Image (cartoon, rainbow over all chains, first blue to last red; front, side, top):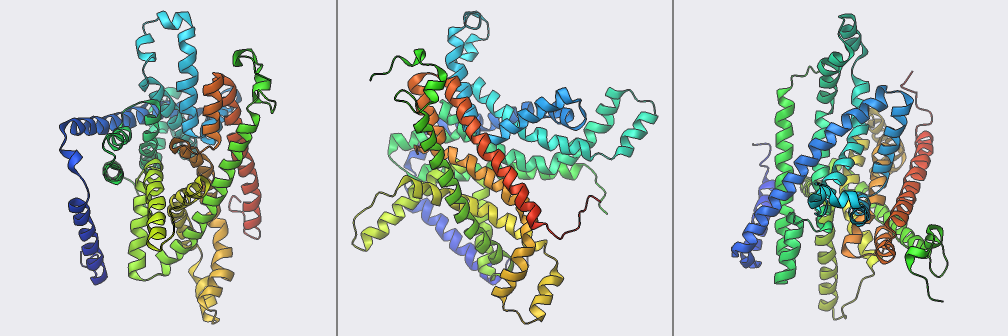
Length: 258
Length: 245
């Protein structure tokens, strides 16, 4: 604490506090009192977090086979996995999202069996496209990360498991995967923050996440800066939460440092 | 000549440079994307070098302010920063101009794009370059100081050449990010490659012609960059021992 509170820092903190107080009292926050906007903002934050969690989970589940195929698979699995990762990582997410939403979205109505299927009510909405596009993006980036993690597990561990007579799947489930996942934990925190920062893209395909909500407030009220400031604060708070969560995760797995 | 309905035009002609083709629009968009990416990256590098040296060797206030800058920029989505900086940058510039008695000006979208993305890039490059400088063996810098080199010369002759190899992988990632981040400018209406693709495909409904074509262009940029960066890294690592043994 003493280390943190050096004289110059106290001055900086005071200046920052003055800035915050100025923002609170001088800027126009009257729109926050409107119950309609309060509901929209809470819904928006909820949607952003929902999309973040769902796409991270689905993406990681996809990334494990993709990483495994690249690390240890035969060429006919490794090559498609590598091509997939290159395409996902080499093109902007916004473009992938628009290709799915505008491209596939305009193709589906012209195919009779899709229009008659039970899935059709969902395919008419925007969120399935957002979830698919963002999950594939996670799968592409994490597939590369998982490849490194699988390769990084020491060979002796796998040989020991094999010599104990473990079947291949048990070895994967008990030895290989847990050790690989433990290796990616520090990276995964950063990747989750990156994914959070990609979620506002879904507002371009009509999903009312927190970014779209503030956009609508700006349009309704003609107030430019204040909703944007709120937006930045909301994202910083979610980022902080993610960082704390992963710090807690990492502290739970015992590691030996030399 | 009036074009037939887009559904009757073959895909290659849609992508071509003829009167009914959108090739020129796409190439124009690609050019804009590359110019913005290069400009933003260069600006980011200038900010990054100053930021990295400031964070390591600057005074206490400079260190803290740079810490705030890199933390905030890296915690807030690029899309939000682009909006904030877009309004703030044009607003501030016009306020200054009005205060000095000039008229308001309309800043060209390309310049705005470069400044906005450059400020974002600067925060990331600060961190990468800081890591690169930290990885330079302290003895090298101490030796240079002991020889009586002024700090500018130490930076130019010792630190920068030695850190290049350490910082290159991170800088390469950031360059690829810069090329992809230009797509975000489509959201606020800049006519770069993603926006051009959107316009072309929305007009012609040929989504599966234009999107794959544009994706190939983006891939082309990233694959060529990866190849060139590999060459540069080899050059930067010349004379280093191969750790793979």
